[in-house]
Image (tube, rainbow, N blue to C red):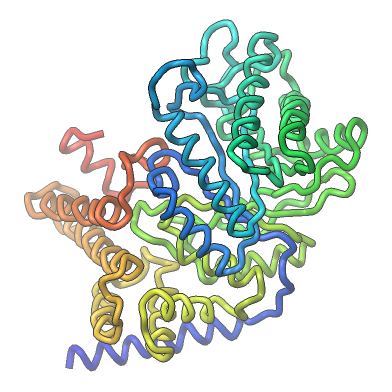
Length: 479
């Protein structure tokens, strides 16, 4: 009876999902630019994957519909890779990998986009009195571009990077600059920062143009204020008309459209689409900290809203293989190769799980339900999963097992919370044992399946942790 009930429940879930699908089959036209922005940093997949793994991943992005590939050498924790020392440190190793990945993308026929936050420098270049004034949105390994010595050092860094890429055989198609999230300076000389950043970006662009003729300038509107959009647009129109080809506007968490802001004349309206979290914005299933994520409702709704706003270009912000399913949904829908998320998911399951079409459609429904993971019953999900796995030839594939382990991770999470309520919040031996199982299961995903490096910065345990994490860490003395 338990198995029969599970099948009935699973069928109901499938029907519910396809009812939503009818609502999502709103006609879209193909977007003119569909970029995968895949920054390799902080110990994520893109930092640790080898050259051929990344080539396969970029090829997969192209298969689903991406036409461009972008990366950012954010320099965090890295020393200058061009120092005349006979060693290969983190900076040199990461830079070598990025060159190879840009080369692979170009060979596969994708356009290449080099992202930068201009005044963020190598860790061994930070010294007084060149340091930027930090605070608020301004943080990182920052130098003040109004300081003459710092200004020269910044330009010299990019001269070396662009020349090295060119000598490696990479010809960049786009240069993309962002003022914040490892950028900025709050000193009086740099105010307003958006214009200081704009002038610095223009100088760096002219260096890039020398080594990569025909390169185009695009911008990311991440964390901008509306007034900054106005200031920058008026400055560009006055000083460098026609220079900025596209602006990828910020979409806040939980939103599906951009703000209505002023753009430079002739600048295409783009959107910076965060595919690294699920449908549900709060609590947040983010960056693979709870295993793989899916946003099968949020992404198509975002595309409908963006096209209604006149957006023509997209940049997907991705943080690793944790959002592989979302990459497929993003590119498959943006390119109009598929009419709905459900069609993409069915194709994804057939491609990676090795199933027949009816089973792939059931997988599509099961996967889509993880868009709201904190309200899904993980025990029911495991029962449905058991049925699916019996009809799945590639059940041991990474793309399958990451979802198996995610389901177990949420079962443990639910038990940790329920035992906490039963014990009045006390950390009983039973509850502590569940937490150990939780971390062990997450490690199986992060290390066993994804091979991640030691997690740093936004991927650390403290970031977007379960609700019980703070209490547990205080109890056991962990940070």
